[in-house]
Length: 301
Image 1 (cartoon, rainbow, N blue to C red):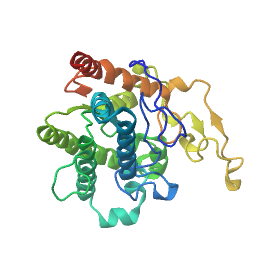
Image 2: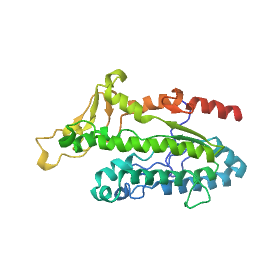
Image 3: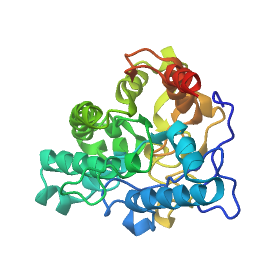
Image 4: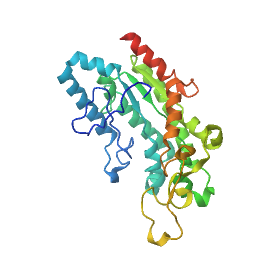
């Protein structure tokens, strides 16, 4: 809304107008092909191929030069990686036994490089987005996955309902590598502008000092049932063996809750994030905020 553009339609929407933006996201997807596979998600690798398809269609419709200009002025927002921890590694004992946390992080960062770049080296689709004229990126770091209601529930016996620190430590280690990776990539993609966020710090501060941000509940979900309103997903029926023990819950004021369900934050949290992305300081977004980038793009064109 700050860009005065409509919400971008999904790629698979028939007859959609993609001239003002497009959404390639697939709920549950990750950097790894195994993440969300049982949910029939669209992997990031396929999402990037879909972007290439759109690039070709734009070239056919508007001409190659016009299509390159449109793509070159576009902003590519990428938020991915959390599901690789929360829906894959941290809930898969076999995966944990065969892959160390350090090896996992290197695997994820390697995939990120593979999908974001297109160097003529050992990778399949390195620089693929950049190759198709994409120049402006907004890349999100990983949030404290161990503080979601789902993980508070999963770690109830060990962590007594507090954040699962093993999950958070993985996210922090990933973020350290992520920041370094972005620094390295900017030396290679010299014409690209890459904005990176510090979402972890914001979410962590809200979790610790919710009332200062207007949140009265940062542990339990707004919608669901059972401990942390997370044992039964929002909208799902109570299992027969839990009838009488669990009661379906829907909060009256979602804006007071940090989490909507066991995994996803509420709209209000995302509004706080978008505010920081738009005009925040280097504490949250670097090397500068999105408002500054838009001014630069408007000046160039």
